[in-house]
Length: 160
Ligand SMILES: CC(C)(COP(=O)(O)OP(=O)(O)OC[C@H]1O[C@@H](n2cnc3c(N)ncnc32)[C@H](O)[C@@H]1OP(=O)(O)O)[C@@H](O)C(=O)NCCC(=O)NCCS
Image (cartoon, rainbow, N blue to C red):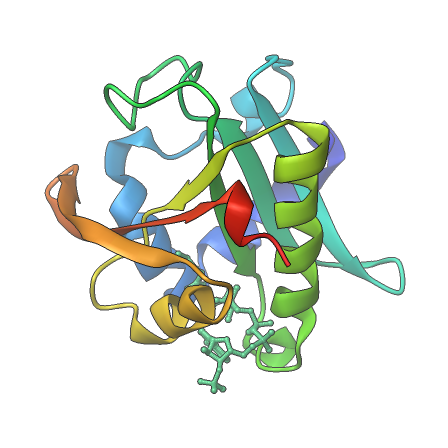
């Protein structure tokens, strides 16, 4: 991602499904014009493309090193993942699944993650089903900024 992506990201943030998914990140969520010019060692901000057309957002965060400690006291080697496909027309076509496979491979192989965690809003049933298909297991429900989220994890040993 670069600063040129701000307009796109703001548009995606306004999509109702994305907005309710971000609800789980509450006040933690990003001011893109600030975040995209910051280079921090514990995070990768990525754009998902289909044939060079930007369609979604994906981030990989070292949850142990991340500065706001969103995940609290969490073991070293744990990475967090956030993903969305920005427009309804691009969802349900298998693109999210392809991006997810690539991102998990990247987290485990390139970043040496032992575990990947995610925190979908409890009511985001379709996203939860999507993660379950990737071998994520439910750890429990936790409140992030007053929103109930389902904490899910997948370990390196579950890698395809
Ligand atoms: C969740 C998401 C990344 C999945 O990507 P995708 O490209 O739509 O998924 P795929 O086409 O690879 O797989 C389809 C599956 O994704 C899940 N899914 C979740 N939200 C969906 C949506 N709005 N439309 C279609 N599929 C969705 C379902 O499990 C679906 O399977 P189903 O059709 O049997 O219900 C994407 O739908 C999305 O960004 N949704 C809105 C924002 C969101 O909820 N992000 C997750 C935050 S935790």
